[in-house]
Image (cartoon, rainbow over all chains, first blue to last red; front, side, top):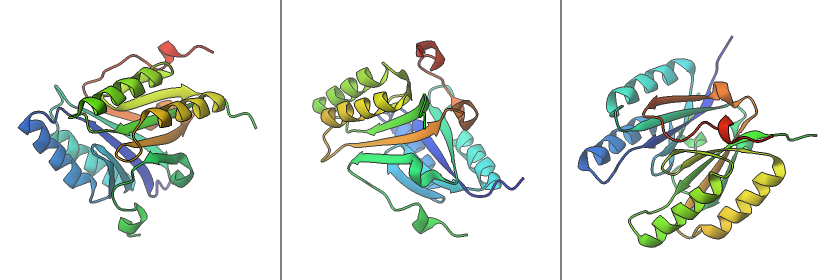
Length: 101
Length: 101
């Protein structure tokens, strides 16, 4: 079965009141924005195929402090445009603008 | 078509360095945990039918400051258990424990 490109929503909970926490968030963001956009301070919408997803997960797992941080992945599939709604300010760049097929 | 109960992921971006921001996050959390669990500081997994979803969205829209906050809704459907992965600490209570059908 071909996995194809799907939207993976990544949410990261880290205490940014510490400088270590801030640094980890910066590193996580740097990795995630390679594949999509930062829609909230610690929420990233990434367009990934299966291999990229495994690689990104492993990279992020190395960055975070698993004793105190929480990282969650939500798989929205490839028909994701109808599955997202937004209220309030919008930030970041469009997912599609960074998507190279 | 019957909408049924689906998982709606709600992510809220608010500046909690201000007391107003903190208060809004508390109010948003209070509404969301009626329908599910707080999995991260500002990420909520809610189990909602269509009517509850419309009601909750309207309530949250009234709480937030649309000029500065961001609220996003992701519709994960009813087969959500296979669509979520977690690394690091887990917090909150199971979605199913608060689900009364």
